[in-house]
Amino acid sequence: MTFPPWAKSLLVQSSMRLAVRTTNSVDPARSAQMALVRGRDTKPELLVRRTLHAAGLRYRLQAKDLIGKPDLVFRSRQIAVFVHGCFWHQHPDQNCRLARMPKSKLDFWAPKLKGNRLRDERVKIALEKRGWRVIEVWECQTKPEDLSKLVEEIKTLMKSSVSVLRDT
Image 1 (cartoon, one colour):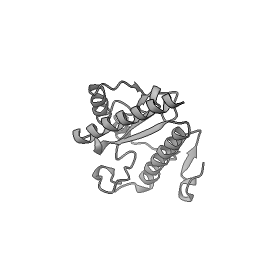
Image 2 (tube, helix red, strand yellow):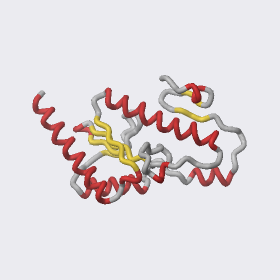
Image 3 (tube, rainbow, N blue to C red):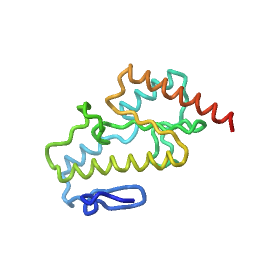
């Protein structure tokens, strides 16, 4: 794995995870606030799950055996869906207001959020190398009209994977 020069001194490497070095002093109030941040069953994820289920699509949740633990997995069609929060995963769309960078403690937040984005890219590439199709759904794209497009995209991918399976 290669990291940009600014990240080498800030990041601690372990297999597929990046951790930002921080000070030992932790404010208990901040720690309690951060403990409320969910890793799964978030509102955007639940919206996506309800929409896909209502459309008749069946999936598995949090595939622990796959790299990056995708939020939704269609195993037989090798489709992995990640539902990303725009802030935590730094949505690259310039029009997304939710992906703003915090104004305070930039020396902490900038490498942390960039590290999250780098990890997302590595996971996506690794899954695609293994033959998976990866769909990223962003928090700002969970409006009903966007979700109906997502349903159509997944159904199209499923149909195309059926024809590939039949041809082989």
